[in-house]
Length: 563
Ligand code: ATP
Ligand code: MG
Image (cartoon, rainbow, N blue to C red; front, top):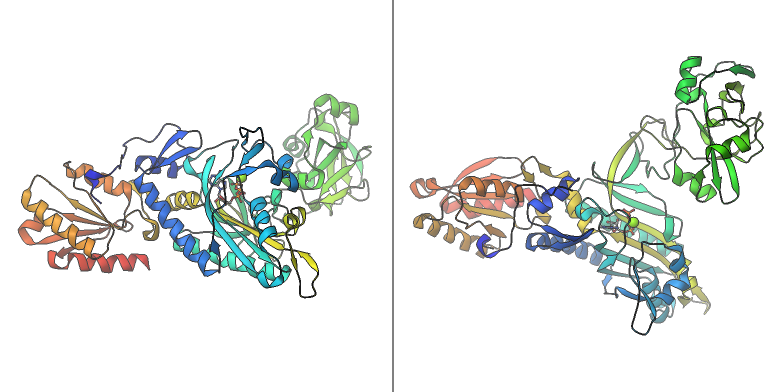
């Protein structure tokens, strides 16, 4: 492609609102433009990247036996009402009416539609298993669209759905997807972790997420450095280190003007792991105490799985229920339900005495108060692995894909049944699998860039080679560059030909910004000595090659880079 005939509007400056590197570079390299919050136009180079990613996704989905279909974006409300998600999902769903005043919505995912289809087209066990997939636009009114194409309100997703007779079949389809996703991400040049995740609003029991390490991510994962335990921190279990518990006997101690855990520890000169943090929270069934060890933090999502949504109590509620200010409350003697973190099962602790200016020392959970036990602390770096003697490390990541075992939740509510060998009607056992091409492209940039620009993994680069004549006013040089361009085309190498009449410095800067794997510079040495320059973007390695070998050397270098 000739630059002068293309729309490649590179920019020197980053957009003011850009936080993520991928956002800055995608805008500066002329890949995307923002139309409105979380709504993007893909320009020609951005489109080529998406086509590359989608091509890889298609190949790997086809390898699983998946069949491509296209489902509509516009859905009748009834389907979503039948599964209960019309009300369960809040403002994230775009809803509208048609001219006949019928309620509709824009598809944020397609479990309802696929199950509708399965209910009509699958009759017997002989029709199973099936994997159906699409690469289709999703619409979600995200609360905080941000970071460029990492979180948008309109985005492409490859979503697929597996239909099986039983759990065994589902496990097979699930493993096929896990392998396909591994291959997709590896081919796209991403480093990633596969982690256990929370099935959330999908329902179902088992779920995994595919996470690309990056500071621009919104998720965190816990990874064991010894065994292969890895989980989203939303459900990661950890073994906080055990402190040395002193032989305290139960006694009340005066702690004047001491409120926070930090102040308690300084005042008594003790380890925060020897204290209990008591939080008064209000849930559906009223107020309750949540207890954590002083060195731990509450994980709200973990707690919400046990209690439903909660809010912190106001100061006057604390005083009314416990008779003390927030800094002096504790579980002993409290006439409220108590949920205590698992890490408190052992040991004796310092807790608030429910009396302003006093704490109790030597309180033994399970003896001096009876809690309900639950894992509600947030795993942190340095905690022990729940499955081995290893230590956990926390890493920030971008979720690029996820897979869910749905089971029969949707087939039951939408009556997608099949007849088994005995002629009995059974609900189809389903799985749901999503992966986001835009997030893959952006995560690739997050992981592969330098201070000059993008360093594309070859498999998803918009072009393979950047052909750069340094001076297009020199007719001889242009003739040479044109000849090379034609030859590269015949060899089916994807070339971006920078035929602009610009200073070499401008062109080199743009080449680094766009980040194509290989650059071929045709300069004055080409005319004088018959030598062109090949430069690998990733390593900065440069080689001078005779004109006669330029194209074959480019070939060799590119295939080396692709391996
Ligand atoms: P998140 O927790 O980040 O909101 P999600 O759990 O809602 O993601 P899914 O509904 O499972 O994501 O969608 C599957 C894939 O679609 C994600 O892994 C991601 O790659 C992509 N995706 C989801 N939401 C967005 C979005 N707002 N913008 C771009 N891609 C998205
Ligand atoms: Mg989401």
